[in-house]
Image (tube, rainbow, N blue to C red; front, side):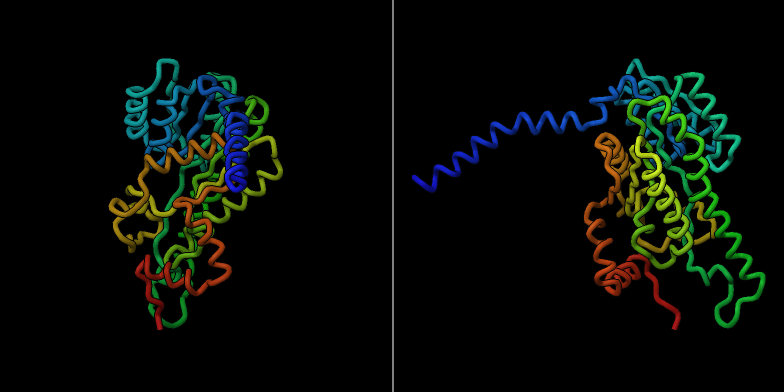
Length: 316
Protein backbone atom coordinates (compact mmCIF):
# COMPACT_ATOMS: atom_id res chain seq x y z
CA UNK A 1 0.00 0.00 0.00
CA UNK A 2 2.79 2.39 0.89
CA UNK A 3 4.43 1.79 -2.50
CA UNK A 4 1.16 2.45 -4.27
CA UNK A 5 0.48 5.83 -2.61
CA UNK A 6 3.40 7.74 -4.19
CA UNK A 7 2.49 6.39 -7.62
CA UNK A 8 -1.11 7.49 -7.19
CA UNK A 9 0.04 10.90 -5.94
CA UNK A 10 2.27 11.37 -8.98
CA UNK A 11 -0.59 10.33 -11.24
CA UNK A 12 -2.98 12.81 -9.63
CA UNK A 13 -0.35 15.54 -9.82
CA UNK A 14 0.16 14.83 -13.52
CA UNK A 15 -3.60 15.08 -14.11
CA UNK A 16 -3.72 18.38 -12.25
CA UNK A 17 -0.79 19.81 -14.18
CA UNK A 18 -1.92 18.60 -17.62
CA UNK A 19 -4.31 21.52 -18.29
CA UNK A 20 -1.67 24.01 -17.16
CA UNK A 21 1.01 22.46 -19.35
CA UNK A 22 -1.40 22.34 -22.30
CA UNK A 23 -2.18 26.03 -21.84
CA UNK A 24 1.50 26.94 -21.60
CA UNK A 25 2.27 25.00 -24.78
CA UNK A 26 -0.65 26.63 -26.58
CA UNK A 27 0.32 30.10 -25.39
CA UNK A 28 3.89 29.51 -26.59
CA UNK A 29 2.62 29.04 -30.11
CA UNK A 30 3.12 31.98 -32.41
CA UNK A 31 -0.45 31.76 -33.71
CA UNK A 32 -1.65 32.49 -30.15
CA UNK A 33 -0.27 36.00 -30.67
CA UNK A 34 -0.60 36.20 -34.45
CA UNK A 35 -3.69 34.33 -35.73
CA UNK A 36 -3.26 32.54 -39.04
CA UNK A 37 -5.91 34.64 -40.77
CA UNK A 38 -3.80 37.74 -40.09
CA UNK A 39 -0.40 36.27 -41.02
CA UNK A 40 1.35 37.70 -44.10
CA UNK A 41 3.91 35.30 -45.56
CA UNK A 42 6.72 36.01 -48.02
CA UNK A 43 8.53 33.07 -49.62
CA UNK A 44 11.77 33.76 -51.49
CA UNK A 45 12.54 30.87 -53.80
CA UNK A 46 8.92 29.75 -53.89
CA UNK A 47 8.64 28.70 -57.52
CA UNK A 48 9.92 25.16 -56.92
CA UNK A 49 11.09 22.65 -54.31
CA UNK A 50 10.44 23.19 -50.62
CA UNK A 51 9.51 26.83 -51.22
CA UNK A 52 6.65 25.88 -53.54
CA UNK A 53 5.43 23.23 -51.10
CA UNK A 54 5.52 25.76 -48.27
CA UNK A 55 3.43 28.18 -50.34
CA UNK A 56 0.74 25.51 -50.75
CA UNK A 57 0.79 24.59 -47.06
CA UNK A 58 0.40 28.19 -45.94
CA UNK A 59 -2.44 28.63 -48.42
CA UNK A 60 -4.17 25.61 -46.87
CA UNK A 61 -3.63 27.03 -43.38
CA UNK A 62 -5.67 30.08 -44.32
CA UNK A 63 -3.15 32.85 -43.75
CA UNK A 64 -4.06 36.34 -44.87
CA UNK A 65 -1.67 36.26 -47.80
CA UNK A 66 1.22 34.42 -49.43
CA UNK A 67 3.64 36.31 -51.67
CA UNK A 68 5.70 33.90 -53.77
CA UNK A 69 8.95 35.13 -55.32
CA UNK A 70 10.97 33.32 -57.97
CA UNK A 71 12.94 33.93 -61.14
CA UNK A 72 10.72 32.09 -63.62
CA UNK A 73 7.26 33.45 -64.35
CA UNK A 74 5.97 30.14 -65.77
CA UNK A 75 6.85 28.22 -62.62
CA UNK A 76 5.45 30.98 -60.41
CA UNK A 77 2.17 30.84 -62.30
CA UNK A 78 1.98 27.07 -61.82
CA UNK A 79 2.62 27.31 -58.06
CA UNK A 80 0.09 30.14 -57.73
CA UNK A 81 -2.53 28.03 -59.51
CA UNK A 82 -1.88 25.15 -57.11
CA UNK A 83 -2.16 27.50 -54.13
CA UNK A 84 -5.40 29.03 -55.41
CA UNK A 85 -6.83 25.55 -55.84
CA UNK A 86 -6.21 24.58 -52.20
CA UNK A 87 -6.35 27.89 -50.33
CA UNK A 88 -8.98 29.02 -47.90
CA UNK A 89 -11.36 31.74 -49.03
CA UNK A 90 -9.66 34.51 -47.04
CA UNK A 91 -6.15 33.84 -48.39
CA UNK A 92 -4.66 36.07 -51.07
CA UNK A 93 -1.98 34.62 -53.37
CA UNK A 94 0.49 36.98 -55.03
CA UNK A 95 3.56 36.37 -57.15
CA UNK A 96 6.56 38.53 -58.01
CA UNK A 97 9.21 37.65 -60.56
CA UNK A 98 12.53 38.43 -58.95
CA UNK A 99 15.97 37.26 -57.90
CA UNK A 100 16.70 37.48 -54.18
CA UNK A 101 20.34 38.24 -54.99
CA UNK A 102 19.34 41.42 -56.85
CA UNK A 103 18.85 44.54 -54.71
CA UNK A 104 16.35 46.15 -57.10
CA UNK A 105 14.20 43.01 -57.11
CA UNK A 106 14.02 42.80 -53.34
CA UNK A 107 13.15 46.50 -53.07
CA UNK A 108 10.36 45.85 -55.58
CA UNK A 109 9.06 42.92 -53.53
CA UNK A 110 9.13 44.97 -50.34
CA UNK A 111 7.22 47.81 -51.99
CA UNK A 112 4.56 45.38 -53.18
CA UNK A 113 3.93 43.74 -49.81
CA UNK A 114 3.86 47.17 -48.15
CA UNK A 115 1.33 48.46 -50.66
CA UNK A 116 -0.91 45.38 -50.57
CA UNK A 117 -0.73 44.26 -46.93
CA UNK A 118 0.91 47.10 -45.04
CA UNK A 119 3.78 44.90 -43.94
CA UNK A 120 4.95 41.32 -43.47
CA UNK A 121 5.05 38.79 -40.64
CA UNK A 122 6.92 35.77 -41.97
CA UNK A 123 9.87 35.65 -44.36
CA UNK A 124 11.08 32.28 -45.63
CA UNK A 125 14.39 32.21 -47.49
CA UNK A 126 14.23 29.00 -49.50
CA UNK A 127 16.33 29.91 -52.53
CA UNK A 128 19.89 28.75 -53.16
CA UNK A 129 22.23 26.96 -55.56
CA UNK A 130 24.13 23.70 -55.44
CA UNK A 131 27.75 22.77 -56.17
CA UNK A 132 28.71 19.10 -56.35
CA UNK A 133 32.36 18.69 -57.30
CA UNK A 134 35.54 18.41 -55.23
CA UNK A 135 37.37 21.72 -55.33
CA UNK A 136 40.46 20.44 -57.11
CA UNK A 137 38.29 18.62 -59.65
CA UNK A 138 36.94 22.00 -60.82
CA UNK A 139 40.44 23.10 -61.84
CA UNK A 140 40.57 20.41 -64.53
CA UNK A 141 44.03 19.34 -63.37
CA UNK A 142 44.49 15.72 -62.31
CA UNK A 143 47.94 16.17 -60.78
CA UNK A 144 50.66 18.76 -60.43
CA UNK A 145 50.36 22.49 -59.99
CA UNK A 146 47.20 24.30 -61.02
CA UNK A 147 47.73 27.08 -63.54
CA UNK A 148 46.00 30.47 -63.54
CA UNK A 149 43.05 29.32 -65.67
CA UNK A 150 42.26 26.45 -63.33
CA UNK A 151 42.40 28.66 -60.25
CA UNK A 152 40.15 31.17 -61.97
CA UNK A 153 37.59 28.46 -62.72
CA UNK A 154 37.34 27.73 -59.00
CA UNK A 155 36.99 31.44 -58.22
CA UNK A 156 34.21 31.79 -60.78
CA UNK A 157 32.28 28.85 -59.31
CA UNK A 158 32.71 30.24 -55.80
CA UNK A 159 31.35 33.61 -56.97
CA UNK A 160 28.20 31.93 -58.30
CA UNK A 161 27.74 29.83 -55.17
CA UNK A 162 28.32 32.81 -52.89
CA UNK A 163 25.85 34.93 -54.82
CA UNK A 164 23.10 32.34 -54.44
CA UNK A 165 23.87 31.06 -50.96
CA UNK A 166 25.20 34.11 -49.12
CA UNK A 167 24.59 37.37 -50.98
CA UNK A 168 20.92 36.49 -51.59
CA UNK A 169 20.16 35.76 -47.92
CA UNK A 170 22.14 38.88 -46.95
CA UNK A 171 20.11 41.14 -49.26
CA UNK A 172 16.88 39.53 -48.06
CA UNK A 173 17.79 40.17 -44.43
CA UNK A 174 18.77 43.79 -44.99
CA UNK A 175 15.67 44.45 -47.08
CA UNK A 176 13.10 42.84 -44.79
CA UNK A 177 14.35 43.08 -41.20
CA UNK A 178 13.15 46.70 -40.74
CA UNK A 179 9.67 46.04 -42.16
CA UNK A 180 9.33 42.89 -40.06
CA UNK A 181 10.26 44.75 -36.88
CA UNK A 182 7.97 47.68 -37.60
CA UNK A 183 4.83 45.97 -38.95
CA UNK A 184 4.50 42.55 -37.30
CA UNK A 185 3.42 41.69 -33.74
CA UNK A 186 5.44 38.46 -34.01
CA UNK A 187 8.05 38.72 -36.79
CA UNK A 188 9.81 35.57 -37.99
CA UNK A 189 12.48 34.59 -40.52
CA UNK A 190 13.27 31.02 -41.50
CA UNK A 191 16.40 30.21 -43.50
CA UNK A 192 16.31 26.91 -45.36
CA UNK A 193 19.96 25.97 -45.05
CA UNK A 194 21.61 22.53 -45.20
CA UNK A 195 23.04 19.91 -42.90
CA UNK A 196 26.28 20.25 -44.87
CA UNK A 197 26.86 23.68 -43.33
CA UNK A 198 27.25 22.02 -39.91
CA UNK A 199 28.72 18.64 -40.84
CA UNK A 200 31.39 18.71 -43.59
CA UNK A 201 31.00 16.50 -46.63
CA UNK A 202 33.35 15.67 -49.51
CA UNK A 203 32.40 17.07 -52.93
CA UNK A 204 30.36 19.75 -51.12
CA UNK A 205 33.17 22.05 -50.00
CA UNK A 206 32.03 25.09 -51.99
CA UNK A 207 28.33 24.46 -51.43
CA UNK A 208 28.72 23.82 -47.72
CA UNK A 209 31.03 26.76 -47.05
CA UNK A 210 28.78 29.23 -48.87
CA UNK A 211 25.73 27.93 -47.00
CA UNK A 212 27.63 28.00 -43.71
CA UNK A 213 28.33 31.69 -44.32
CA UNK A 214 24.60 32.46 -44.46
CA UNK A 215 23.99 30.24 -41.42
CA UNK A 216 26.42 32.24 -39.32
CA UNK A 217 25.08 35.49 -40.77
CA UNK A 218 21.55 34.69 -39.60
CA UNK A 219 22.75 33.39 -36.25
CA UNK A 220 24.49 36.72 -35.62
CA UNK A 221 21.47 38.68 -36.89
CA UNK A 222 19.30 36.79 -34.41
CA UNK A 223 21.40 38.32 -31.61
CA UNK A 224 21.36 41.78 -33.18
CA UNK A 225 17.58 41.69 -33.72
CA UNK A 226 16.02 39.81 -30.77
CA UNK A 227 12.52 41.01 -31.65
CA UNK A 228 12.57 38.68 -34.68
CA UNK A 229 12.43 34.91 -34.24
CA UNK A 230 15.16 33.50 -36.50
CA UNK A 231 14.97 29.81 -37.40
CA UNK A 232 17.92 28.01 -38.99
CA UNK A 233 16.59 24.92 -40.76
CA UNK A 234 19.26 22.30 -41.58
CA UNK A 235 17.86 19.37 -43.57
CA UNK A 236 19.68 16.45 -45.11
CA UNK A 237 19.18 15.48 -48.74
CA UNK A 238 15.71 16.40 -50.03
CA UNK A 239 13.90 14.87 -52.98
CA UNK A 240 13.74 16.89 -56.20
CA UNK A 241 15.97 18.24 -58.95
CA UNK A 242 17.79 20.93 -56.94
CA UNK A 243 21.18 19.42 -57.87
CA UNK A 244 20.46 19.39 -61.61
CA UNK A 245 21.54 23.01 -62.00
CA UNK A 246 24.74 22.86 -59.96
CA UNK A 247 26.88 25.94 -60.58
CA UNK A 248 29.96 23.77 -61.08
CA UNK A 249 28.27 21.37 -63.50
CA UNK A 250 28.82 18.46 -61.15
CA UNK A 251 26.87 15.21 -61.17
CA UNK A 252 24.93 13.74 -58.26
CA UNK A 253 27.09 11.16 -56.47
CA UNK A 254 24.84 9.97 -53.66
CA UNK A 255 21.83 7.66 -53.97
CA UNK A 256 18.91 9.01 -56.00
CA UNK A 257 17.40 11.83 -53.87
CA UNK A 258 13.94 11.05 -55.26
CA UNK A 259 14.17 7.56 -53.75
CA UNK A 260 16.09 8.16 -50.54
CA UNK A 261 15.75 11.88 -49.83
CA UNK A 262 13.47 13.65 -47.36
CA UNK A 263 9.99 14.28 -48.72
CA UNK A 264 9.22 17.90 -49.53
CA UNK A 265 5.85 17.74 -47.78
CA UNK A 266 7.51 16.51 -44.58
CA UNK A 267 10.21 19.17 -44.76
CA UNK A 268 7.68 21.94 -45.36
CA UNK A 269 5.50 20.78 -42.46
CA UNK A 270 8.53 20.77 -40.17
CA UNK A 271 9.41 24.31 -41.30
CA UNK A 272 5.90 25.53 -40.46
CA UNK A 273 6.11 23.89 -37.03
CA UNK A 274 9.53 25.41 -36.37
CA UNK A 275 8.20 28.88 -37.12
CA UNK A 276 5.10 28.26 -35.00
CA UNK A 277 7.20 27.41 -31.93
CA UNK A 278 10.02 29.87 -32.64
CA UNK A 279 12.66 27.15 -32.78
CA UNK A 280 16.17 28.47 -33.34
CA UNK A 281 17.88 25.44 -34.90
CA UNK A 282 16.20 22.47 -36.51
CA UNK A 283 18.05 19.42 -37.85
CA UNK A 284 16.16 17.05 -40.13
CA UNK A 285 16.29 14.16 -39.57
CA UNK A 286 16.50 15.03 -35.87
CA UNK A 287 19.29 12.50 -35.32
CA UNK A 288 21.62 14.76 -37.31
CA UNK A 289 21.65 17.15 -34.36
CA UNK A 290 23.56 14.67 -32.17
CA UNK A 291 25.63 13.73 -35.23
CA UNK A 292 26.81 17.33 -35.37
CA UNK A 293 28.16 16.90 -31.83
CA UNK A 294 29.66 13.51 -32.69
CA UNK A 295 31.72 15.21 -35.39
CA UNK A 296 33.60 17.17 -32.74
CA UNK A 297 34.07 14.11 -30.54
CA UNK A 298 34.89 11.53 -33.21
CA UNK A 299 35.58 13.39 -36.50
CA UNK A 300 37.16 10.47 -38.35
CA UNK A 301 33.95 8.42 -38.03
CA UNK A 302 31.74 11.20 -39.38
CA UNK A 303 34.20 11.89 -42.20
CA UNK A 304 34.18 8.21 -43.15
CA UNK A 305 30.38 8.09 -43.18
CA UNK A 306 30.24 11.23 -45.32
CA UNK A 307 32.71 9.72 -47.79
CA UNK A 308 30.56 6.60 -48.04
CA UNK A 309 27.39 8.61 -48.65
CA UNK A 310 28.95 10.68 -51.44
CA UNK A 311 30.92 7.75 -52.87
CA UNK A 312 34.14 9.69 -52.53
CA UNK A 313 37.63 8.18 -52.51
CA UNK A 314 40.54 10.57 -51.88
CA UNK A 315 43.26 10.72 -54.52
CA UNK A 316 46.34 8.89 -53.30
